[in-house]
Image 1 (cartoon, rainbow, N blue to C red):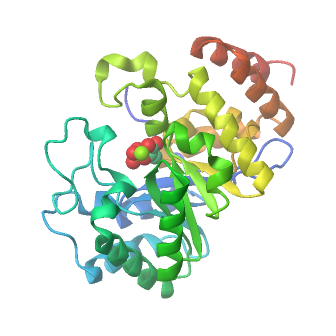
Image 2 (image 1 turned 30 degrees about the vertical axis):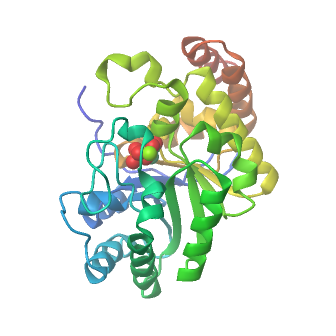
Length: 315
Ligand code: PEP
Ligand code: MG
């Protein structure tokens, strides 16, 4: 399929009855961020910092990091920019941080786990992020990838706050983190769900295996019910829970996510327009009914059909 045309977002994300849901962009560089600004993204929901350094044998110096981060922050003055600390390992090896030849790299030392043996790499990255934030007008949020336990979240939060980060979060990418969202939110200001990895780990289906398409579907009831727990816990805590995986770029699913209590949606800039249009066509109450119908369905296909029925008719 050919990529969708880049049609800028017509207006800020909101349901037909005015419930606001910021529509943010996923980026990997300053150039991407300038593109996202042209697409009228309301901010950045995921800056994949490892993309800026993927071809590197050695750790980038602090000055170089500051320059890369500044380039993204400068594209969104006054707006939210969520920076993710290095998500190295598995499909994104970085020689200075990851171990080659792990038997199961997706289940190995990746994301935040690399900081256990290399705390100084994370410390330097946090210092660079804080330096870049100091002379920027962006509202900077910082989160760690691949968190499985409360102890990991608490340790990351402590390091980030000591470095001077004001808004600290963690990604929900494992079933364990999803089920413990309430516990995680005792330690951090926000969570953001990486549905690509959450689906991979819930369905035990390698996200890179081309033959496992049906299992790599965030509409699978097991995934939806974990997302329901994330939305429920965040609503109860009164904290922000975004989505930054591919699921946010599926317009029907985006409405379900809003109905589940998800507070922002971040996606490739090309999806912003269609997600915004679909969201604007349904009320918050309809989104909630769509979410209930989706979570009650026994299969992914049944969930999609049930949501199409709720959102398609009776308006
Ligand atoms: C995800 O897992 O959904 C995510 C947003 O992170 P990445 O795709 O970079 O692993
Ligand atoms: Mg991920």
